Length: 348
Image (cartoon, rainbow, N blue to C red; front, side, top):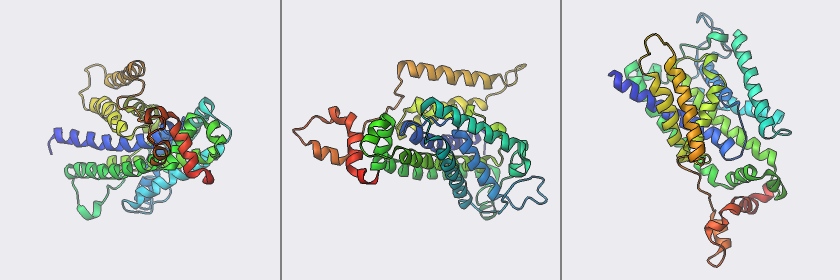
């Protein structure tokens, strides 16, 4: 495989993987209004758990880590997603019951820093600052893939997983549960007055979004074969926020556009550029500046994103409005809250 195709398939992998990560953060922030600034900590936990259960027993490996069960793909990936969902339950009960908006964001980012310090300093957990390495690629013992054949193969596998997860997410956002999420996002007081259990809705959103984070993180460590704490500093969370803000908050199709523009073109494409003589690492800093400028331009001229959210009206509301009722456009704002109450008010 030539260098060009190596770069192309690597970019394709990150396009699909960050599409998965963006869907997870979008259902928390874009659909439910939860400012989860600890999002990439969930990604890291999913990656670590996926890697640790994939590796054999740590004896003789030169590493220190828990688990070491040698579980094959895709079961290791599912365990990473489940682990992040369990972490979401713990953090949700600590934070979501009493905190909102910027207070919630500060506590969550503090939680991510605590997790970072634990993983970085407690070596028996996930090998400390060195992190996990030599994580076996999927189907390594079955397909006997070389490096040249593994990259396009795993990019395709990631694309299939992203398509499945996009279908599931589309079903969730169009369901009564999705309309409840948006009701909580738009006005949690009104949602509570209509019989919605706000905390329960936020908890469900955190669990679903964190599962997506764990799957995305598991794919990253399976693709690269390693992960250490420097790869998931808080700044990585804001890259995912940039993806959904640029693509369009609350729109799954826009997330793919945002992943292409921000993560694929601005972050990883520039990583393949040659270093500037005498200025090592300068391209990385220029890249961060470009993302910041891009965000400011988008927020100034098109705050709704490249592919803005389309307000959704359910079949129930269309039947209730009828031909002689208000137009669909006039009813869009009220539809999510009202229809959520009609469809699952008894389950709130």
